[in-house]
Image (tube, rainbow, N blue to C red; front, side, top):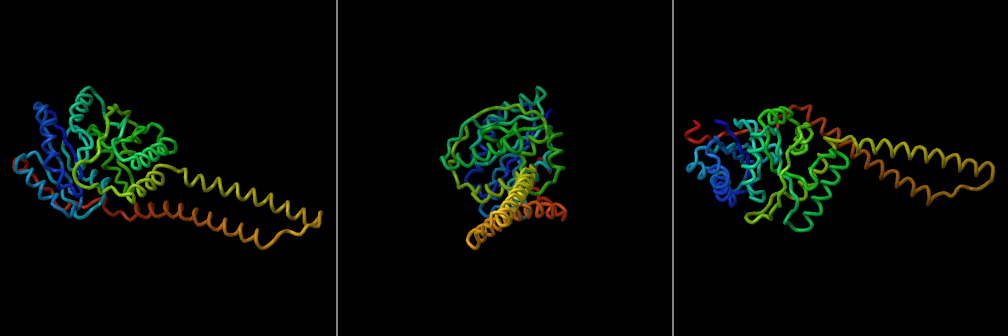
Length: 313
């Protein structure tokens, strides 16, 4: 029989776990009894009762495997950790908050059975506050413009891939990255299923604006040379401008006997250029930090324990 793994990263999801499992069982597991399933829940260092709720669910279904990380490593690393222990012929990844409808997994499986290596559920609409929609849509537009033009317009974080594709992503072991951009980067043309993303009903999202900003920076530093190219172009333009200005002022001084205006204009120029230089150094520093992080060879994540259901032991 074919085997499907469903990887679900969990971070402060104690309120979601019972319903998430119940919906998965009803809409996916019970719909395809001809397929073996394993549910790989990854506890990403949660400080609430997430692990306890996962163990409760596991007592009712031995297909549940719990991957406990030693601390909070972040969603990206938690997903890769789950993928690394998954044993399915195909692996689906979904969130634990039910904003993405699990029933789409059955449709994804059907496309996979027809030969699709990658199937993604892309949002065509988001039933979320306008501020979240604004920042999300801006991020995806910039990603399409500067990083990968084939990236879905409304983004995605719900997908299924063949185990061969999953192995590629696990072996990449990039520390500051995005699993979603990586998936599109591999070049496998995805089959796209559109749906409306719902607003979260239970619990509080831990996806803070700081984490969103970190993802924004990581996406462009890891997957694009554009920031460095902008620095080079801007530096070249400033050099040309400075050279032309120098010739003009020297000409005015020697030929037209015009005194060059001094203190105020000089200070303005110095302060503006100093600010620009600091921004440039900051961008270069972001690249250097990520290079340092990669060369230190620290593990992407640390799995403290994998808790198997009784039937899997």
